[in-house]
Amino acid sequence: MRQGPLSGLKVVEFAGIGPGPFCGMLLSDLGADVVRIDRKGPGRSSPADITARGRRSVALDLKNPAAIETCLKLMEGADAVFEGFRPGVMERLGLGPDVAMARNPKLVYGRMTGWGQFGPYANAAGHDMNYIAITGALHAIGTKEKPIPPLNLVGDFGGGALYLAFGLLAGVIHARASGQGQVIDCAMSDGAASLMAMFYGFKASGMWKEERRANLLDGGAHFYDTYQCSDGKWISIGSIEPQFYALLLEKTGIDDPEFAKQMDRGSWDGLREKLAHVIAQKTQDEWSEIMGGTDVCFAPVLDLDDAPKHPHNVARQTFVQVEGVTQPAPAPRFSATPGAIQGPPPGIGAHDREALSDWGFSGADIDTLKAAGALAG
Image 1 (tube, one colour):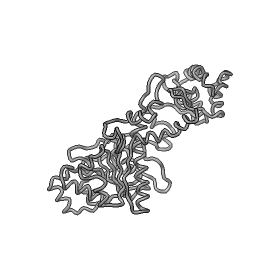
Image 2: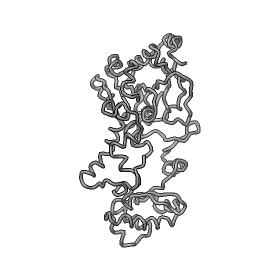
Image 3: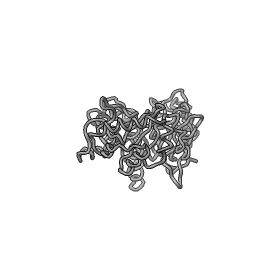
Image 4: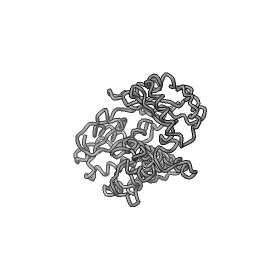
């Protein structure tokens, strides 16, 4: 029995990379029954393949007509389906939204791409950095000398997977109320642009300069930046509000009158140098003891080894272990219907019979697919 607020939701996922698997993980963590369609072939997911956790895998040869029919039958019984191929690939396979929704009018059909289903770049290859580059996000992140990619967080996972999950669930709510399914065109470039809404507001109001490390939230302000400690480790300080800034000065023992010029942009560089000198006198642990858990707006900058050990993360069980692999626990948290990791990453085709049987295929149907070479297991 699957656990979480999405228990009972049936989703078909066509295996892909990046934001697709992460979306599938989010839905599964909250209880959805996500069946992943893998290409037929050998392979077992490693326990370290964290974004593949919690699903069941059915391996199909999508060049086989019987496998295509199997996919369509699965979509007949699904609330939602999502894929991450370039525009036109699913149509060429005979699995496009027109065909699928003709058989299931309530189906919500999610399409995850970098550039979207139309536009001059729609059929071009790309990666996270490219998708956020055209939105203004990449230009705003980095050092004064150059933009720096912020991992895959802004395009793939923030602008892609989260918007796809949001879109799918919104579509399901509408379909259940109206009986009408629809296609969700989820472009990472669109999502990344949406994430920039506040900064476009800053730009419109004259609060944003078109250069890096010159603004309130991009490391330009001395009170919103990272600082190196005496042990070579780093801390983060975000003392924006006046009362929090006053507490920062108190905790660091700073009484230099120049620090009264908090919002004077022309003073930021000089004040950063002075603050950096003060921070460099103590270790990360010492500053954590002084400022941790206070209204300074402070946290140590932790690596992937130390983050799961931090007392706050330990208290909240933010990280868990599955098959010896440390990984983030399901989020967000629900008081009445808590989510859960529904299982480890599946091997390819590990659930051929189990998942198909649960989704309405008879034993004879499954045997026929196996005999036809459409099914791996």
